[in-house]
Amino acid sequence: MSLQTESTQNAGAAGTGSTTSSTATDAEPASTGVVLRAPRITDAARLWQIADESQVLDVNSSYAYLLWCRDFAATSVVVESEGRVVGFVTGYSRPEAPGTLFVWQVAVDADQRGRGLGVAMLDWLVSTVTAPGHPAGGAVEALETTVSPDNPASIAMFASLARRRGAEMVRSELFGPDVFPDSHAAEDLYHISPIARKTERDHS
Ligand SMILES: CC(C)(COP(=O)(O)OP(=O)(O)OC[C@H]1O[C@@H](n2cnc3c(N)ncnc32)[C@H](O)[C@@H]1OP(=O)(O)O)[C@@H](O)C(=O)NCCC(=O)NCCS
Image (cartoon, rainbow, N blue to C red; front, side, top):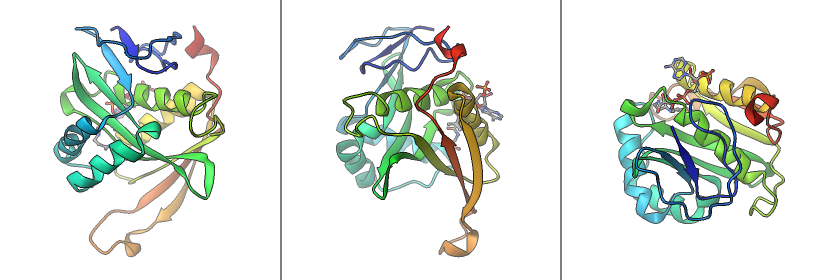
């Protein structure tokens, strides 16, 4: 599978764990390839649709995805396969801990799962936000996310990212079911650090 990126950082071909540098700034998607890039406002409807079809994620309003693609594009990523957006990650720099990238939602279309696209998006995003010149100042050292205990795919994906980065992943309790107003499952906090370094395996 070929992979292109619109950023100066390429986190590696999905499913191969390899890394190549790219200076492309506006790469055209290869017809059989995969492109990782920051979201645009015109992607918001697809993000909303992918979240809805995941049947796992909390589906935010369509307006929320529009705002996200406008204001948090620099800490988010979409993946295109054959010119169609098939996955996304929404994230933000924590206002009280700017060295921490918080990953809010990750989803990949059901028929695209297991290709390495989820972890490729996360790896690309980490490479992007830790690069000098990024609005986060290249100062991001940790990634946090929350996952429900009944989501092994998500936990495995973040564990895979931690391995790629030679980082430690630590779980703790954050939001128990009692703090949700509905029947939402608990959300455990996963703290992954240090994330800036890539392992030798990923430079091969
Ligand atoms: C979680 C999700 C984004 C993973 O996307 P994906 O592209 O299929 O994941 P990848 O192919 O990149 O796999 C990454 C790692 O997770 C593992 N993994 C993926 N799905 C798995 C599953 N169902 N069970 C166990 N491990 C799984 C892979 O084996 C891989 O591990 P490796 O790198 O050690 O080989 C996808 O399953 C999804 O969209 N789920 C619905 C939405 C959701 O649950 N989002 C997360 C909410 S916190």
